[in-house]
Length: 189
Image (cartoon, rainbow, N blue to C red; front, top):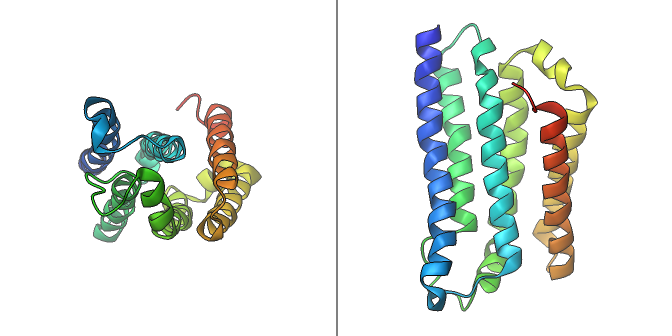
């Protein structure tokens, strides 16, 4: 089983690495080519949030070693789930925004897709957590259910809100909450 787990880890690492590369490449492009698009702080905050989610997911998946029986379906599930993180990276920070005047316009025109993918990630996370076993789910306690349900509700609100103030507040709260969650539950593996 260790050989299969190693293969799963490699595939997850490749896909997540592509997502991180997408975020970093396009963030650095703002510095290297400032005329190609003016940075929009809210967009950059959401970019950081996606980066944080990817890093957290990578850390969570280290716990896949507790999965005893791997099947093709569990492998395909994990690859599909991981691919959603790459899709989030491309949605929040595409290579080009030529059809838009600014990153602000881009973000607000694509936010329904962005938040819908975030909702999907959090729903599928429940299945991913169950893949690691009932004991693992129990070890997360009520904080896990609170985190997943609150994030889904907040993302639904994000779909319908066009208020910049709300979105700054939302992303700020989510970043702080997830950093606290990380250090509370995952400081050690």
